[in-house]
Length: 444
Image (cartoon, rainbow, N blue to C red; front, side, top):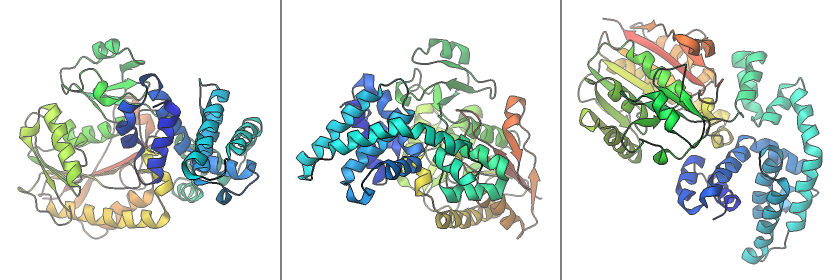
């Protein structure tokens, strides 16, 4: 499978509800190795600014979108993204390949060919759209900048209320920025030696966190040197920061990872705390199985037990002295890395998420033993999922005392104090996602 064909396949699966990263991994082995990077790049530049590409299609196509064959639209959107944002690839080659894809529509469905329209629209976009996009980016109105950066208008408005116009515009800009992979090195790994031995892209030890390696690309994780042996693990630096902040205040004893997902944070804790014992919950049995495989890869499976089920009703085997609640959320801080999420989120879904988060945090506070610590965190930059959730729970109880989160080193320049609880990281680098964390001790 060629790279462009692979991108169209993945984008079709994403449109039907799949996650881009998982679809790319599934298709990886079937794509010509030299064109795998093209597939991933075309997928992500399409999804990051999908709203803008739809707007340009409506602006420069002489027919209404609804009058086009759906497969023609599925060719045009990545085509528009590619001729505008795809670097180091000749636009003429991309246009030619997509025109051929449009010609195949008639063969598959008997629908009229729209290949000439595809060719005309893409050439018009190449000619006229760059100046138009530049005017949007320079416009003072938030809605124009949001459109230029591919951020839904309601999201930009919400950020404006949360952060004020200056920081909201910064978030809008950062949400469409390219992201790269950071790796958590396991204890005993020489980060400099690993970085020097990695030849696929620039790699270097991070100056921000002592366990992080920064790669200037997004490689296939199982192909990384030392991955199968548990020496390195893909993990965002914001996530690493949250775990390290928790460990700095952990009194010892049993830890509950209340929404463990695929076990990345549990693996982090177990790898760096030899005496740690963890119980991990997740509502998805598939994710708890993935978490077990992750713990086995790291060689820590004997100190963790993953249980599938609802965190609102499960009972821990032993009352924990620490709880990590990485609550399910909008993922708005990771929309650069998982851009399909921004097009699936709505104000109604955001409200439902915050209601669930409040219930989960309240349950965590009930379960923790006196003197124990609870970390509430999300990969969101919406106050409705962060400070407002914490405030809702604290208003109903007086037994939680907030602990300060004061990161050392250069990372502190990205941290904003929550209003009034916790701390927020903006996605200021390709390796740091937007993230919120608040830490509390239960009074004796």
